[in-house]
Amino acid sequence: MERKISTIGVLTSGGDAPGMNAAIRAVTRTARYHEMNVIGIMRGYQGLIDKEFVKFTSSSVSNTIQRGGTILKTARCGAFMTPEGRKAAYENMVEAGIDALVVIGGNGSLTGAQLFAREYDIPIIGLPGTIDNDLYGTDSTIGYDSALNTIVDCVDKIRDTANSHDRIFFIEVMGRDAGFLAQNSAIASGAEAAIIPEGSTDVDQLAEFIDRGKRKSKNSAIVLVSEAQKNGVGGAFYYADRIKKEFPQFDARVTILGHLQRGGTPSAYDRILASRMGYAAIEALLEGQRNVMIGIKNDEIVYVPISRAIKMDKPINQELIAVLNVLSM
Ligand code: ATP
Image 1 (cartoon, helix red, strand yellow):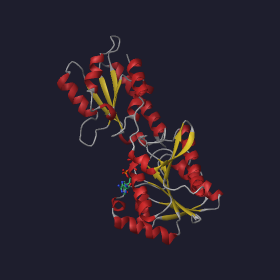
Image 2: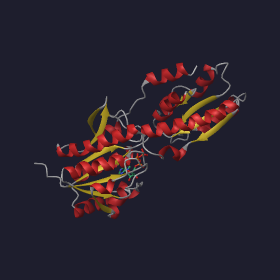
Image 3: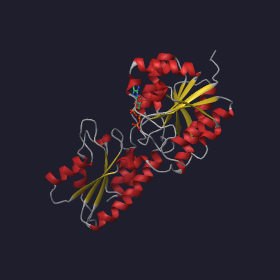
Image 4: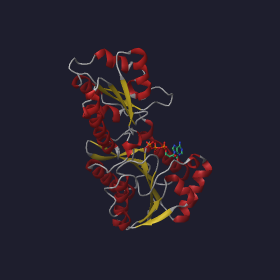
């Protein structure tokens, strides 16, 4: 028989994402509703190793739903990648009486969660908290919609200046391995093209964009580019350099949006998504679920085994590529 869960720990890990606070709030309040104790773990896995534990009540999360960032702070923690680090984390959990964990983070954080759960047989529920939207099994991740809105705001501003000159602007957005931010912000901002990691191996997306030609009445262009991949290929500077060398008739400029994309208040969509997912995390634990990520599919909450969420590729819908290509003519 499953052990009764009376105390849960909640942490945020990896890159922060708008809506993480809404998720922490929902986890805390739902757990308290079911009379569970809640321990907020500061600074992700680092706090688990350093015993940075804070007892959370319903009022600990008051006035947080609208705030960006994460009140629990977040960190990248090298020590948790080692067996010794995870052993220390487990011993601290046991000492603090934590029976189950809710981990809010991206692919790396959920990879760590899966390893930890396997080694120590701990019930863990993952919430997809990342602006990249790169987790399989969920239509959206917490923070993605807010980041998309921030990017679109910035692109609207850049278009004003791009229109005043004859220029190609390469605007770099996050998403090293996933082009959701670039592709959808290109559609939403009426940009001329997106260059995304999903397409970079088989076609030369820059040459394709130039070949499509700039419409006669258009004397400027905006291209959304996903940041460089780990092998250094890609990124806005890479394509601007290529323009200089291969298409010198064009004047290219680069804007890197960087951490701006993570900031700001969460959108209404992300607040609702995070609230539903945080609520679902506790319901899942009460149902005896373990080692699943909460996802959303066709507006329904689903449970996705963490092993699938982190391993499977989440493809870009080809329709989005066609929509951008046709509408940017
Ligand atoms: P984002 O999508 O915003 O980058 P993320 O969760 O993918 O977020 P990472 O830096 O990849 O961010 O991972 C966060 C933390 O998760 C790491 O610092 C580490 O503590 C833990 N982690 C990542 N991968 C592993 C792993 N293979 N084993 C154990 N822990 C891991």
